[in-house]
Image 1 (cartoon, rainbow, N blue to C red):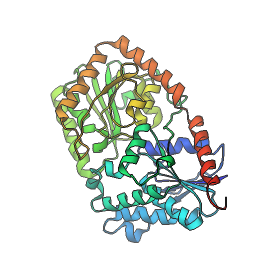
Image 2 (tube, rainbow, N blue to C red; image 1 turned 135 degrees about the vertical axis):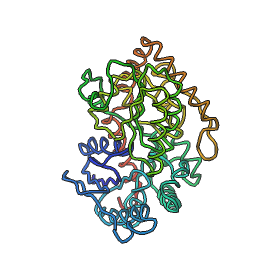
Image 3 (spheres, helix red, strand yellow; image 1 turned 90 degrees about the vertical axis):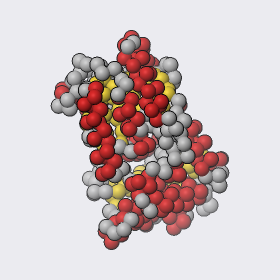
Image 4 (cartoon, rainbow, N blue to C red; image 1 turned 45 degrees about the vertical axis):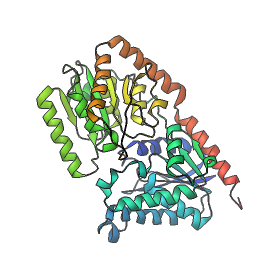
Length: 399
């Protein structure tokens, strides 16, 4: 079976959970099928990986962020001739998969890591292009032969957002993690250079600088978190320069109030992240929209208790009272908290509860790793994905 997998992010250019998913899934898929990966960005040296550049004529002009993406989709669609199935990840590549289906008569499987209509704040980043990104996603998802939702919560969102999609075509196959790579690391050599004191308790946030990941709520919660604990914010890839500047200024202001705020503005390498998590007292995930939340798996694999918002797929990962705490959140029609100050205080209260009870926190951390080992392995996820490929190929005329 020849599979063409289309993704914006692929190592070494990975900045979010969808890119992490693509990197690990392809590793295990390659053991099961004849796999060709098509991605965005700079040329890759890895075999069977083709990077497609955007057309400068459109990428450098008005609305170039989105038009450049669509130009890459055209390149990808042309390159998938001869595949038995095309599998796409995120709206950036979805249209390429749809066009491949139409051009070459091959089935299209798409994994939904998020939904554009559920992220209205993306208009800050894409401007008028947000309408095009939403159109590309809708066109692809309504015509796809199979849609993979990374959680049951995500499946429900898909069917509510796109009622034209046949529920029988939407299947749940979760994200995963490599527990051999994400496991407790007793070392501290990588922490000191970042300004982290391994001998002090710490509360860790990891995520992009976007409204979705709730970093602004993490900053607000930091005001109420025990000042004896470090608040470590590993924040990268701002949606816009303005958002990046706003959050940097807020972090500096909060550090002036409580101290002990460590701002790490980069998507840290996995080995560094593992060491940060291994020495964390609590992992904080204040997302306002999260179809799955792979960062929670990473923390749990490193035996860190999690305090997370009870949205999307997070309750399918974090077991309230067992591997951490879930904090309820009500959102408005824009997808933002109705009571942001109350939400932040509730997050801080749960964090402080764990900081004050290290024994319970350690027990929750151990339970988290046990849960990861039992439910979220990449080989199992890859095998389930290949079985789905077989099913859609069998239903394709002429297969």
